[in-house]
Amino acid sequence: MHKEAGRITFAVELYVFVLAVIFGAAGYVLFGMTELHIALKWGIAGLLGLIVIAGAVFAPFFGRSVSHSLESNILHVSYGVFFKYAANVDFRRVVYITKLRGPFERLTGVVVLAFYFSGGCVFVPVGDAAKAERYIRKWTQRIR
Image (cartoon, rainbow, N blue to C red; front, side, top):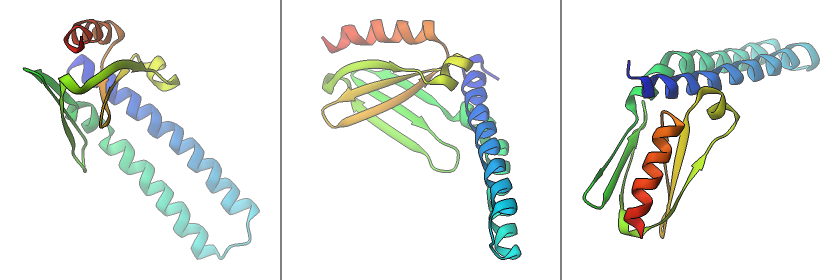
C-alpha cells in the first residue's frame, strides 16, 4: 500500500475506533439506564454495531480511493468508497489555500488542504506535512 494511502487509512480507522467507543458507551447507557422494550434495545445496539463493523471493513478502501491532480489550471479531486465525491476546480478561482489538522490528523500525520474559491471549498487529504507544504508553496504561486 502506498505510504500516503496508509496514513489516510489509519486516520479513518482511528475515527472508526472512536465511534466504536462512543457507540459502546451509548449501548451501555441504553441497556442499563433506560426503560425501552428489549427488542428495541437490541435493534438499536445491532444497528450501532453494524455501523462500526462496516466502518472497520471499508476504512482501508478509503485511503486508496483518494486522488488529486492539477492539470493546466484545473484541480481534480476525488475520493469515496460507496459514494464517490469528485470536484473539478478552476485554479484561477482559488482565493487561498490552508491546512486543516484536527487531533486525529495530527496523531496520524495526515494533513487536509482546504482550497477556498469563489463558489465554496474543496478538501484534499494529503499524506504528510512536508508534502502539504510543498503543495501550498507551489500552488500558491499559481494563484497570484
